Image (tube, rainbow, N blue to C red; front, top):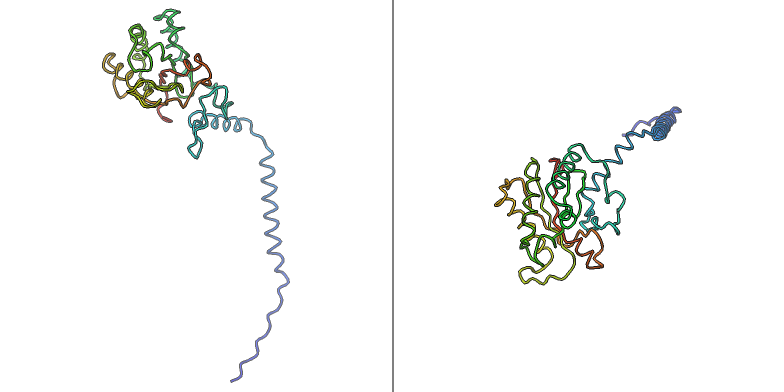
Length: 248
């Protein structure tokens, strides 16, 4: 049976309007984006900059791949500008730093402060008190020097008056370890941090929930290990008093 002949559809002369409308819509969106990006909001830009600084301060020690970027080295830091110092210190941090500094100036002599305390600094999430390890420990060991005990006792009293958590961080230089008890820098730094923590709990009566012992080995030097003096500065015990719970 022969099929009936189909009629050819008539050409739609208005089909171009669909493409034209799409083009106009995209063009409008393009100019809206250009206009929006041309308006500089300084306050929002500053907030973004501050948030990036905070992120780099806390997590800048390691990149996404986990590779150490040596954030602790002041003279040779790949991202030195935001990492070296973050100047926006919160009210709680400023008050705590002033309280600790005032207490230590009252309880320790000027000579003790110069020999024992390397630095007291306010950071984004707390206050860091850095002590020279060679003034606390005998040689490459975790044993206290007799003359350091009284200073540690007075230092502990200033910590006890605060309600915050304290991270006890052990740092050493790259000097070869000559103590058979410790096979590497990580072990020595861990042993020293643990000794300080046990002292605060067992002798000074600290709540163990407030304390944590951390070893950084020789991974975070303050200065290059190019001299005995620099190695002495890098070998330290840091007390990081945390005023902010959220980020840590």
